[in-house]
Image (cartoon, rainbow, N blue to C red):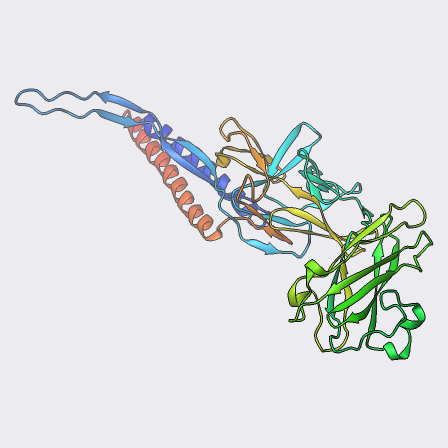
Amino acid sequence: MQRSLFSAVSGLRNHQTRMDVIGNNIANVNTTAFKTGRATFKESFSQVLTGATRPVAGQGGINPLEVGMGMQLASIDTIFTQGNLETTGVTTDMAVQGNSFFVVGQGSNQSFFTRAGNFQLDADGRLVSPTNGFVVQGRMATNGVLGGALTDIKLPAGQTAPAKATTQAGLSGNLDSSAPLIVAADPAKPTDAELAAPENVGSVTQTSKGVYDSLGVKHDITLVAWKVASNKWDIRVDLSSLNGGGTPSTFGPGSLMFKSDGTLDVASSTIPAIKFKPAGNAADVSIKLDPGMGATGITSFATGNSALIRDQDGYTAGSLQRITVGRDGTIVGSFSNGTNQALAQVALASFNNPEGMERAGDNMYTVSANSGSPVIGYSGRETSSTIASGALEMSNVDLAQEFTEMIITQRGFQANGKMITTSDDMLQELVNLKR
């Protein structure tokens, strides 16, 4: 009689634990990146009343007689299914799409893992979890090049991008093939007065462009081109007005030779580099002019002069204005000089058995004996998981499922309670036999 009582007690106790798990799930229905729990049961040990017997000649075998002793809690699983994404528009909010985890550090020796990407910048510019201040881990970039060991991600305000000296500039546009030849005493070396003479309008064209030295100082250079033959234009660059002084130089003379189809004959053309020494501590500047190829480069058609120096690869120093986060976790800074540079990359960790990790509170997990060691890497390399910026992963709790489980658990609890009262009635009846 007491066996039924203790079996029912085990049912009450473990159904209460299952209700605790359900209650925790429902409580965290709006917790960022929360992963639902699931309690499962198993049969407890059984008392063998009679063992099984073998079949013998003319008589079959007999099955064992066993009485179960109740039930036990088999497992409390963490279900790591992907939660839906909620768009927040906050750049430092991140959500993992896949099975990986963000890596956060407490000090230099202890790492935790989380799916909650509601990160913020602290007073020192470190990217941290707002719940406990643990610092997001990744690799930092030097001058836009990612590398180095796993470390704290730090994005200090006022970070600068260094200036870059111009090393290359491109030529494009058209030099009018129908223009007359230049009128000059020496067409190969016309004077400034001859270049500016009214009779040479159309035979001479010029264009200006700002270039930069190694300190980010802008210098204006002027390209002058004049027609000396039916398929040839000579060019030179005027550097007489370098900003801040310096040692000016004259580029050229160079020459542009054109084919019968109006495109540049690169092999026959002469385009020397532009070189000058800026004032101050800046390094010497050497710029290669790229005339382009075919119709996308410099051409000579009968459509007027439109030649110009287009893009150049130098820029001044700039300060950090905003950041963006790519799908691979790369944090890119946009600077006031119009450049973009990689600043850092957020690391991700993967586990052979993520369900084996231990909850550490604050939406954090730690390694356990059955989770396996973390494989820490980066999206697109060591893991196929990606990162969505400006979004957070929502809880994966299914309320419909939880309420259904609640009803089932409640009925199971009631049934075990009824078993106790029934067993008690039977014991009472047994006691009453003495009356």
